[in-house]
Length: 114
Length: 114
Image (cartoon, rainbow over all chains, first blue to last red):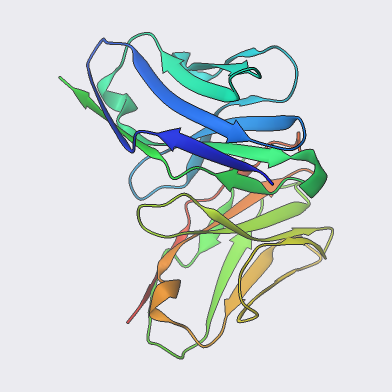
């Protein structure tokens, strides 16, 4: 079975500070992992994805995530938060054995304090 | 190029009614997936269609059904609506049905059941 756990449903950071959003996965087979962002009243936008190539994945808007198999983690980071980063962030896993059906976490709401 | 489009944007129904939601994938994409996102939660997989065939089904009752047309657009039907069906319904399209095929999400249809 596949699942993801996002630690912290709400995270607040100051503008310019490091952003760290946590995601741990559970998968019986090598996983593909994704981070999506959702702005209010909008759909999901892909930030980055890990598909068994480089373990450090760079995405849009200076976001990056590192796949750590030993820790079953795929945490999302950004060196310097911007006001426009305030949104809901979702970690998701796909198991190759089930096509491209996503299993999403419950989301982390990021607030950026000016 | 146009992204994934969904219609209608918002919909209000009463319990027991039936609803049809529509999705047009990105041009050239042959796979469409449907997700239900209840307020405060991550999206949950409902269906995937590829080349007009059902490729996956989530843990949803038979009141939920879908189909894909020759032009790869898709409809999601929900019968005998319940209050708990109130949610944002997201459609995602991808080129194929492989795990590595990037999925692009539409803006969603907000369904309110009274």
